[in-house]
Amino acid sequence: MSKIKLSVKQWSDDDKPREKILQKGIKSVSDAELIAILIGSGCGDENAVELAKRILSGADNKLSQLATTSIEELMKRYKGVGTAKAISILAALELGYRACHEEPDKIEVASMSQDAYRAIFSKIGNLAHEEFWVIHLNNANKILYKQHVATGGLTRTAVDNRIVFKAAMEKGSTGLILAHNHPSGRLQPSTEDINLTKMIKNAANIFDIRLLDHIIVGNESIKPCPYYSFSDHGMMP
Image 1: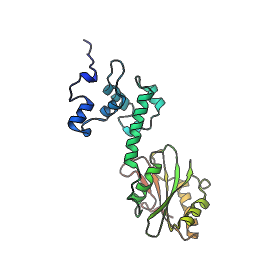
Image 2: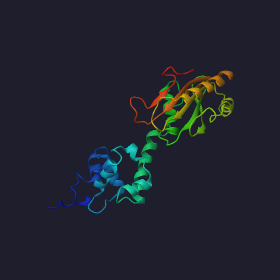
Image 3: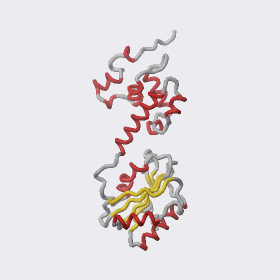
Image 4: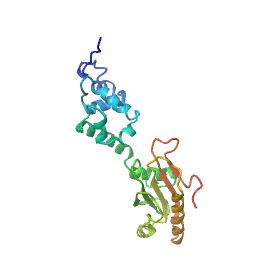
């Protein structure tokens, strides 16, 4: 006997995602049910929740992985997902990402590596390409300015010391923290990362500016720590 498929409207109120939220709160629904609310309908014999579960399964049931999928990929890989549904899914995931990682107003002082990581994550966390930034500090380690210096693979020639220290002079910086991301998620510093840190450290000494740390930001799911700190690992030159 073939299985009878029920539309979402035919489910009991306890199983309908919207009704469940009204009765039990937003925390009561699963990731698939939230996605089902976004897409609104399924395809053929597949209801919205079943389609949502299939989409999640294709991303190893990880929202962070689903968020990196393109609109074109979603439409190609999942029957029943058109432009509107794909955009709705990615728009919601992007909103969640921005809500979690919007720059907190309270991070004004970077006295520890965790402070620096939290201050810079909103700029370079989860990017698909490398970017190099410099956090400028005063004597009390208060953040004065966050400077985007380079995009792409980092080399000593790609990062121009003159740009970094021109900004330091203009802002009155007395301390610097370097930061860049590794899109691969691998946190271990490369030889070029180490050489670049040494180069900037030597230049900072000339200007009597402290180079306090170099933070490598990886994927936020990395445990136990989603970043690498040169200072914490005794790697500062």
